Amino acid sequence: MAKKMAVRKQQKVKRKPVNFGWVRKLGPAVKWLLVSGCMVTLLLALSYLPASWQNVWPVEIIAFNNPAVQVQQSDIAALLKENNMNGMLAVDVLVLREKLLENPWVREVAVKKQWPNRLVIEIQEYDVVAKVNDKFMLENGVLVEGIESAIASMPVTINMGSKNLKQKDLMKHIISRISKIKNSIEESQLAVNDFSINANDSWSLSTSNGIEIKIGRKQHVDRVKRFSSIYAAIENKEQLQTIDLRYSNGVAVSYRPESTSGEKNG
Image (cartoon, rainbow, N blue to C red; front, side, top):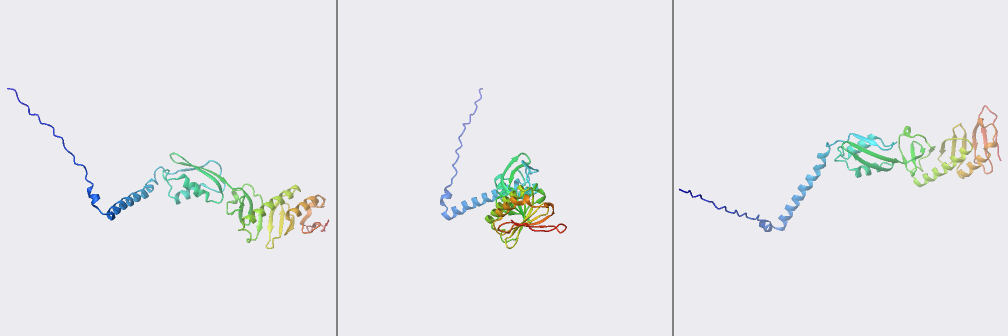
């Protein structure tokens, strides 16, 4: 006897569409609150996200492509810590670059990541043109503090009052004149040790062999050029103590006490 097999017809399940009609029934104020709440939640989530990156691939090596003099590895590490950039994912190279450019010594800087744990820094620093009192004058006229032992050769040392130090353009003009004076002195086979500018703006300098040269308040470059033209004629140079250029038509020369002192005008 043949068995009749019952065949169950497959019934299609009809899915009801999600009804968002309730949203349309809400008032404008409620809708605005819902959207605002979602936005606030999203922003809060994003604000906590960088904190979770801090210990992912920590920065372990800070390398300089070129030797920096005044910016040290410890300075970079301090900036990373201050700006919550302890991990490679959290380091924003553009932000770090801007922070480094705030250092008055830094002329230009480039920052690169080398995965998994290295930052490579390339820094160009401003050159030092003079030491002014206990600070350093950079080529852009800015006075800054720094590490003197890291400077290979100090161009010139200037001792002066504080009234002109904040006038950037004036300081650049002073440095320009001093550079010309220094070149004239070196033409006479002398080396400048330091310059002094007193409260009355009277200039003087000392040489490496102990001679004090008094220049005065005006015509600084012209007076030193005049000195250079007659220096060869001065006798007993090894006994010179001071040379006074504050004369309109010559110089006054004095010698150390152990030698006969005298004056030479002309």
